Length: 166
Image 1: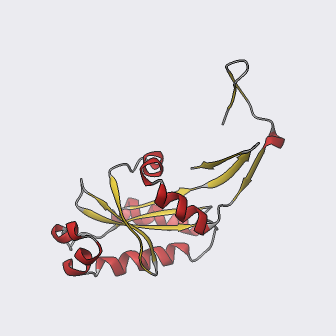
Image 2: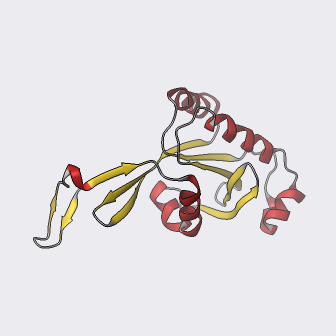
């Protein structure tokens, strides 16, 4: 990360004392992602996913839809690094995969044409990951073609500005 020196019009390394990194608070992070979905999804390279609903059921943080792949996307958000995050995410995706077309249409009327045989994609957003979770995610994606993606985020304070690092 480089700081823009407005006075000289150059890029300079920020002073270490000027940067303060902290794990994001889950509720704040969920609110920021929901209210700024287009910017956030573009930052992740997921701009083709439309956000449908926030917390459609208690264990699913966000529900999206990948129109290009005609696939539901389950998005889970946590600011912490916790061992159970992958288990929670897989359980949520499995439950959404069991939903009939009528249940999907209750959440979003346009989902009536979703192929129920396709497993939902899974997007994890967290302040960090247990090493075993990352190994499992890699194994699921590379060996079993499970569409699962993990992104690490942090809140960074630089002077009076707060930044979200992805």
